[in-house]
Length: 184
Image (tube, rainbow, N blue to C red):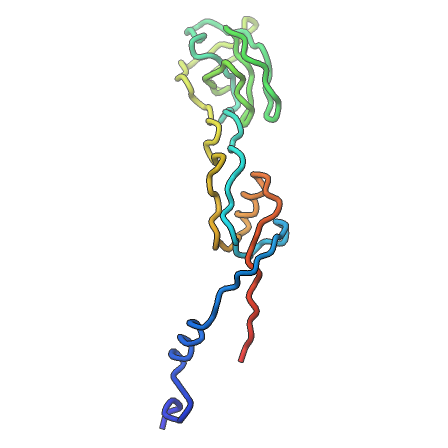
């Protein structure tokens, strides 16, 4: 006689099916800081309130200019230096600006030339390889757009998710409270 032929006993698979059918997911939620959210399950979609990047920016260290101002062999005066994080001044017509990776493109500029394709001379910036209009510019919202759902309800939060949330300014998330588990 096997175990399941005894009165009151059932096969393990059948017992597990019954338990899973009767198990109810928790509807209780809690709001947690990101530092306490690792491994928790999101109770609501996370929608970005910002664009990433927040403005067009340079994908390279180099020089930005108006494409229309480029002429082969003619140097362009350098009108400003734009490090990442600085707010640039509008680009003066007929000039170029020194720009660094991640720096915001100044109003009026529409092209970035890599520093390896240029040289600074006493007369100004000399561009050695003809640029293409729009090259090396990352558009606003290229990675994440304002209003975009970036993490969906039901996702178990991983370390990279917490970094993503922090990068768009999310400090707290609503997660499901962990279930209470009993072992028989």
